[in-house]
Image 1 (cartoon, rainbow, N blue to C red):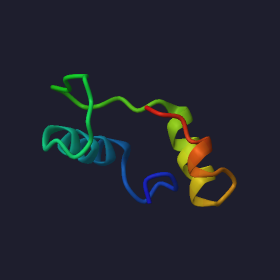
Image 2: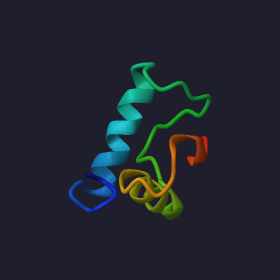
Image 3: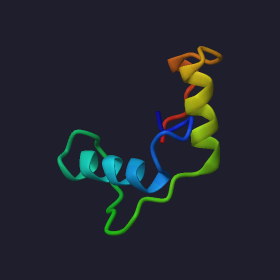
Image 4: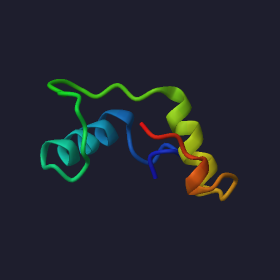
Length: 61
């Protein structure tokens, strides 16, 4: 939903931050403000959702 504009970048980054804060996503980066997501990540998410790339092709962020 995020990759095609149904969810705002700010809301998506807030969700990712919450997952990090709750320990569901492991990260060694402390996030105290809005998480800035690179443009290429949205492109990759779109390709993945459209089955144009596989999970193995997704970069590790």
